[in-house]
Length: 233
Image (tube, rainbow, N blue to C red; front, side):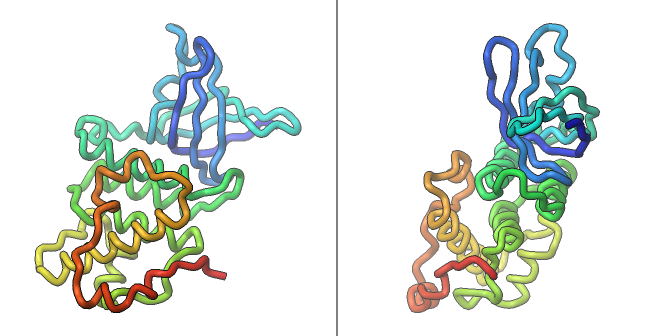
């Protein structure tokens, strides 16, 4: 079977002498594993579209009964050059990709998840980064994955909760003490979710403070039951 689809590279690994294995999230087919034969040779033409968080239109070939596709062609949409020139942006982009890699099943399409990742990378490329990027992305992915919370927890205000789920990531700049405390609580929600559902920690987690304990307050000590997370039905 031959098909084309837009995709974003989540992870790559060298394979044999000149091949590369990649995981990518596609618009119409969900998360796929694919091989790029000969891409590391001097004459290889698809190296650019096999780099992490590269966005391209790919041509795939899958043998009947096969589970790993072969990428036979690709047209770059964006390699997000501004992200690649800045270590903080690069690490945050890798964090987004690792979250998608670890929290999405193979071969289950979700255009909303693809659009979330693409929008996050686009804002990271064009906008200013802030301390709420990681938590806001995680909360939105939780919702799309069926683990979203129906109401704010830990006495986070409804308006702050809405902003973390709906506003542009680059606009989530907070300076008021109550907002910074609410952001810390959002990080606690994300940390609890990731600790509960991942069998081993994210490689990028330590770079964003999601594994740091939230400040101890009367509010978040008296309502621990609100952080019990269950999948939505």
